[in-house]
Image (cartoon, rainbow over all chains, first blue to last red; front, side):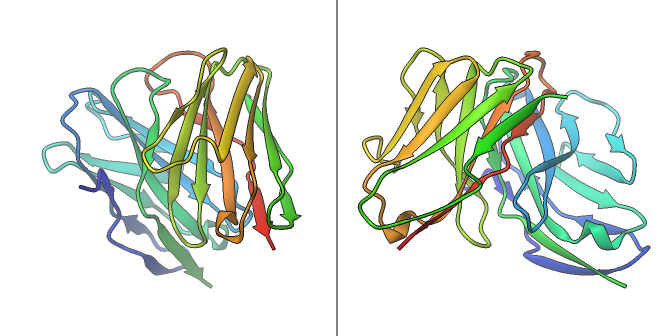
Length: 116
Length: 118
């Protein structure tokens, strides 16, 4: 079974509008972390935001916010006020357990294209 | 901030040759290095986890004799694709925890290596 599922292969969003990228996960661990990364065409992986399983508040980082719904096992990324530079692939990832050395498992990704 | 330097950025080689990819952690010690492979328009798939001073742990389906991983020091991990074939053409990227050992620690990624085997 897929541990991380991103159901949207691609999305168009109008510049200056908000966009929500879906991510659901599957784990039996009580302690886990959820990450979002951005990958532009250059290939580099850019860290966007992190949510811990015990964090009570939704994480926010500038224009990025994470809508964490633990009971539904979802961790959707919201990008507000989209910019042309936001066009990229976006990956949701999960780390199971508390050890920082534990591996990340990535979802299939969502390609976002921001239209001017 | 912590940086992982990955070289080369791209390499083109003939079928049957071996290619070595290096990842160096700058300003921090990487006791663990993850090696991922990414085919075009697909996600990152973990190939193996290397730990300094010990044998790498390979994911199911990854040939350890083909993808040799060495993590001889706290700042250097290498991936050697031996006897490369066209089907090994892919984007390879390494990543390492920053070393603080806290649960919200993000991975620091190298810039990736695009391998094309002719």
